[in-house]
Length: 71
Image (cartoon, rainbow, N blue to C red; front, side, top):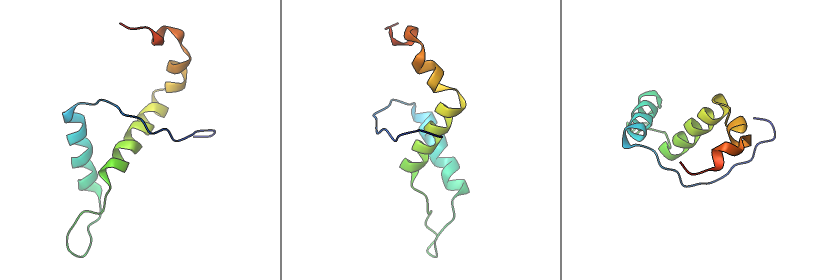
């Protein structure tokens, strides 16, 4: 992730995708002494989307002028 910046944006995703992120984040999160999960699900959503964008070459997608038209 060289030469990257953090951008806060509003996005639309399905409820199923959000449910999966939350469920998997909780399944892999440590618990504190009271048994509460120690995971910030909003941060996990950000991590997952960032990983997807880098893995799927969003840079090339953003460079293609055809991706800026409606339809």
